[in-house]
Length: 214
Image (cartoon, rainbow, N blue to C red; front, side, top):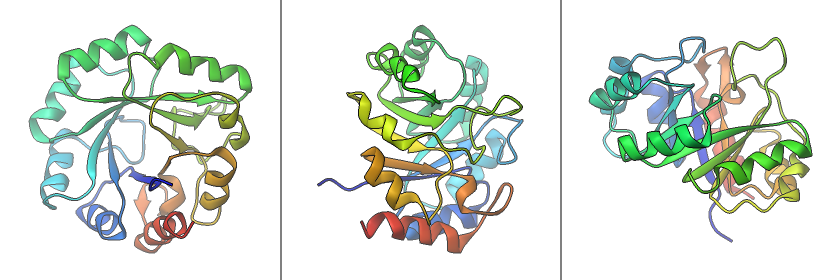
C-alpha cells in the first residue's frame, strides 16, 4: 500500500511550516483568500516559504482568482501546485493550468452522492482533486469550516486522479476517515489549530502520526 499523503493547509508562520516539515507532512498550503483567518499576502507567503529550504511541496490556495493574483504570488513564492477552491469551471481550471504551467488541484464540495458527478467534469483538466465538505449556507468561506461529509460517499465513485480528503479532519478521526473513504491523502486546516487561524505544533504532530500509524 502506498504512503498516504498529508497536507497541512493554512500555514501562516515560519514555525508552523517548520513543524509540518519535521512531522513529515508531504504538502503545506498557503491561503490567498482574504476572507480566511489563515490568509497570507504574497510577500508573507514568500518569506515563510523561504524560511525553510526544501521540505513539503508548497500549495497555493486560491478562490476564483484573477490571473494577476496568481502572478503576484508566483513572483514571491515557488509554488508546486495551484489549488482552486472556488466555483471555477473546467474551462477556467484548464486555462490556469496552461497559463501558469503548474499542476492544478481542484476542490469539489460534497454533500450528497449527486455531487460526485463533478469528478467527471474536472478529471480531464486537473492534476489532482480535493473532496471537501460543502460549506454550510451561512459560511463565508468555501472550505476550512470544520465540516465533514459522509466519508463513505467517496467509495461510490471511481476517482481517476490523485486526491485528498478534507473537511472536519482531526488527529482523533483521521484514521477512521481514511479507512472509510479509502482516501490516498488527507488535508487538514482547522483540525490542527489551537484557535482559529493559529496552528498548534502538538496537533500537527499528532495528526501526521495518526496517519502514519495506520
